[in-house]
Image 1 (cartoon, rainbow, N blue to C red):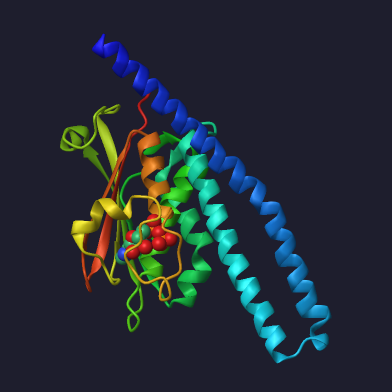
Image 2: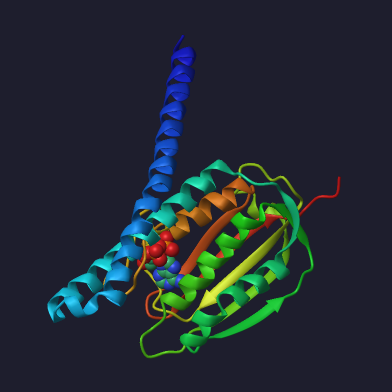
Length: 258
Ligand code: ADP
């Protein structure tokens, strides 16, 4: 009887959870369109009717556009978060090395702007079975954080490595080892770092350790990353030291040949 009650509670909880996630998805999706309008009309006013505004008026419009753009980022991140819970998309055979290179290509502008350097040591050609959009987002979140959380007076240097490790090394970390081998992706930065006692916190949605005014962000990226890794039966963790830098470790099961 106790077991039945427990089952019933679990069922109800997961239903509520699904409804909540559905709500987050629909709300963020539907908020996008009106927000786009606010931005585009404010932009038109600033570009075509600027002379009808005085200095103050223009400043206020500028601020309005900035805030609205921040809201847009937040909504986009929320949408990505709820997508990551749904595990949508077809799984494919993916070469992790190619994926890392593609992400670096996408981020090349911000890396260049930060005068950043990337050192690659991609020692394996292994493939994994996964959802490309999600995995790309995972890698992109970690790499772009490595650039973003840089020290003010230092050029960011990222060291990215891939290698194969046996699954037994992850026995304590992953409940279900779906492959005998895992690919280990390490992404190391020389940035501001964080206190390791907050390790769990950084992977939780909306949790941020660094000042809002200094480093822009929504606190959603690493929560998405963790979900994506778990959707792929993997594991993610990090090591860090304040003022020295951080290293993120991603483990994903190597594709097994059927
Ligand atoms: P966001 O960057 O939008 O705040 P994330 O979920 O990506 O959100 O990261 C959560 C928090 O973890 C960040 O606010 C930051 O305090 C910390 N963090 C993440 N990556 C790094 C890093 N490479 N170096 C230092 N701190 C980091």
